[in-house]
Length: 334
Image (cartoon, rainbow, N blue to C red; front, side, top):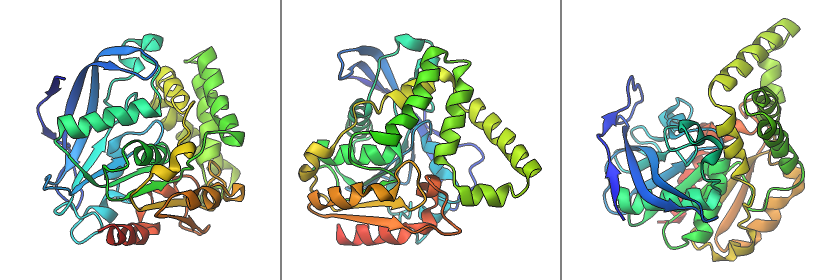
């Protein structure tokens, strides 16, 4: 199968304390989705940091609506990728891809609109596998990890390609089909967008904001009515400008048949699943991880307690709160 790799470019205005990311695109021709739909050219955008040397590749996968560049933030990249840090980019080859339908990868808003193939999480992982193996020459991963949707993709990687990695770390996720309030939340995003991708966007963004925010942090940031109103207006405006209705519809609908639960015993690599106590998308009172982690041969569940530093569902991107567990995972998976 042919692929095209375009010119590599360094990320503009990069200010991290580690080697500058190099961006490029990988194009798969005649990509067939699980439902039988095809795309003549599927473009996968990605950035890499460091140099591939044997089995030192690390795949980090973003959440719903995000992109790989999110991991270049001060609270994530600067904490993990710098000299002497857990994922020191002079030692590891870090891969930050934009999943199908996200960032600079192929997505509905590029022109096909609702004629774009209806991808799901397995399609996204299959495409990532081809990017790694055919596009980047990666034969084995030292680590696969991800946040939120990327955390769910990490579970899919574990059951779909159990021999391909040394370690797995899903953050802010659960290894079961999306049901209960989580499904309610997604329907509250999907339904208004399906009815009207333009005008339904505000309703969808309102729902997403409530489910993924932290009451403690919002109270600190907006301690008065006027400050809360200002924060609300700015936050909603920023979120609405960051996406389009049709892309968001596809992004949330792609979780429709996610369910690695029947195959958890297939996971071979050590796996540390990390959630936070204030995550309303994956509330700890459901007890899902405590139950399911017992089926993962080398699995461990870590629940981060509520603190002044946690950020609700967004705790997954505050690396200082869980980097010690990542270091431990890398040690036990040598």
